[in-house]
Length: 267
Length: 267
DNA sequence: CGCCACTTTGAATTAGCTCAAATTCCGTGG
DNA sequence: CCACGGAATTTGAGCTAATTCAAAGTGGCG
Image 1 (cartoon, chains in turn green, orange, blue, red):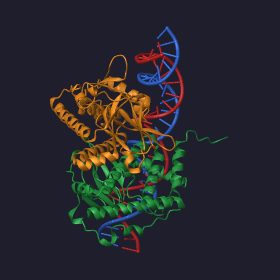
Image 2: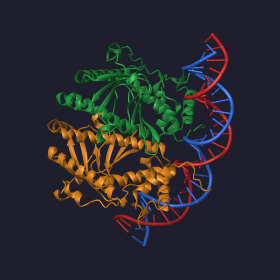
Image 3: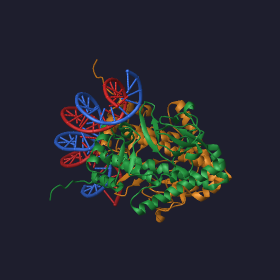
């Protein structure tokens, strides 16, 4: 639930697609940038369509704010305009699992459609802005504007595909590679959204990363140390929350190295 | 792709919701059965609605038939009327991962909506019947009949929730518990669909189960042996593909036992 | 009847976990 | 501005669950 005392109305100046331009991409490879520019442009158009057709309520959230909780009655979907959010599954016996990380452009709340109640928690990890849309009004708007329906279905479809990729990562990659793949995905997500990727801030503890990736916090720490030793990433001096990724493709190469069967040191 | 030589038109007698009644539930606990009856009834109504409004093309498939392949142009969604299907993700570097198992009532193809191409393979593991619906015609029908839209969204929502549960299972459960939880889910899925659950046939090899659960085939075999030793399951004599589950809740209890911190053997 | 694919079981190995200790960071209050 | 304390992180050492490797065992099917 939103903490009412902390709920604010978004200041118009920092919202909408205008804000995006201030954080223009700083990528290196020109053709990659072109792809990301396209994706970013598409995102901006989508946001515009949503804004015009739905006039969603905008809410500013802060780290720790709960957007919705497991068991709560379903009614709204949430479109993320900025900030970072985590999706947490809670089992009957108390196990807790981070099952998703969401950025600008992602939607929250799909899990509630089927059963009429949300089946997980959605929590802000950072200051951000969410657009609140009731499912009913979304459906109504979709009837008038089929393009909106396509946007909605696309968001769900992407979520399904990404969840499957997560499962594959957890099931087939060793710990070090999983961390590298996680950083790669994060960097690419930022790039697609038109944000800089050379230096990213992990707004989570090692324990949260580990939980999401199915390993212990110590394993995450060791993996990051190895990545730094191999110069695939670099820690920004003072503080280990900020990570520099000089070259995203080096992360993919690291993953492949982890998967390579034999090191073949000599000969 | 369907093998054209093997594609048949479904015989009317064995299709539709009438066929369901022949496989009425054989559950034990009365209240559980009531819940499953309800779910089963809902499923039947949904299938009826789809049939009336969409008049989908019906196809009989056999073990090994590929419903769609990664990279193939998206166009159709598939509603499963009977049979068992697996969803396989393939990574660029050749890793292969079973990311889903689908039964009667489930839908296939959602992953294709976002990118215009399917992003995984869907393969039949058994003889079954799928209803083929083009995404376009589905959307058109949804405009005329909003209940259909709800059915469609519910199917996607359930898929998202279940994918998250899978991730949680892989990330938080030890190998033995994962196998037990897998069997529990399978049995419950069958029960919800009005099929008998006391004796189920695993239509997959140990290797496939292991891949799906993120462990080796040997680990699956050992886990099943331990489950049998603990009388949680029982192998039907002659052949180890058929498993008897006298009491589904014993599987949940086994999972909890695996999670218990200390065995506390003495004192 | 015999082949072949699948399964089971054992033994040795190892990746990742647990436990523990030292270090760093950051907010808070003097 | 700096000292302090708690939380997060790093790193080491030993341990364990699960893997790999290997060898039987079993069943289905031509």
